[in-house]
Amino acid sequence: MFPVDTVPRETCLRVGEAALALASRAGGVVIDTYGFPVDRPEDLLPR
Amino acid sequence: MALFDHTAERLARGPAVLFAVGPADAMAEVILRYDPQASVKSDRFVFHNGVQLYGPVRVTPDAARQAGLPAGMTAGYYAAIVEGGTSRPRPDSLKWQDAERLIRGLAARLGGTVHDERPAMDLKLRLSVYSGHELPVGQVIEVIQPYIDTGDLVFQEDSGVSGAYYLLTKTEPVFFVAYWPSRVSRSKLALPPPALGELRDKKPCR
Image (tube, each protein chain N blue to C red):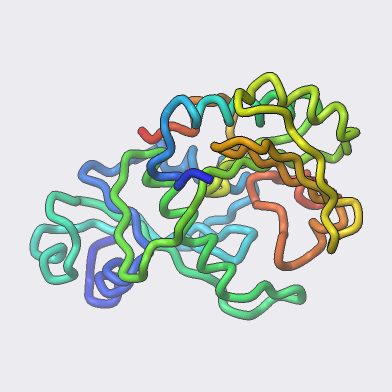
């Protein structure tokens, strides 16, 4: 597993896309490592 | 809130998030995303996982120097927990973990700097999907597999928790999925996060 602070950008986006696709199918909500909801893969990238 | 002795001490102890320029309204928006049912006391936000966030605390250069804070910061927030307490108390150690996650999440979203006298937790990239509807494992694989380029997901039952299972690839980097049935949401060790709002009370699967 990748440390959240140093995960490569592409990995971050890919995992985010997979989780959002699953949430869409299950009618669920994606929550990130920190406890915040994720609406789009870019939410996982540091500002 | 101005920085005075006790506040400076708490800010210096952490976990705290510091800003060169205060995030203003963006902080309130992010906090309501973290817990839509958060309440506001006089000097803090109170969340449903036993974590509290104090601030904003104004940081002057002199106060920052005295408190050992990084230079150039003008505002900060620090987290604390409600110790013991409720009818279904969670271990305080778990609340402190949530407090650190909150602070690091705020820093990531708002461009802040984390300050904490304790060693940082080794947090991994982990996304959780909470839902009130359980999907058959075949559908979970069908949805996720297209995003994976390290081989097919392999099913593995959890030997200790009935109904729980794992999906993982054999090739590095391993893509790992864990499924936990809804009853696990009732465990005080694995309570759903406040961000779920009303879904939290429905004991979702994860």
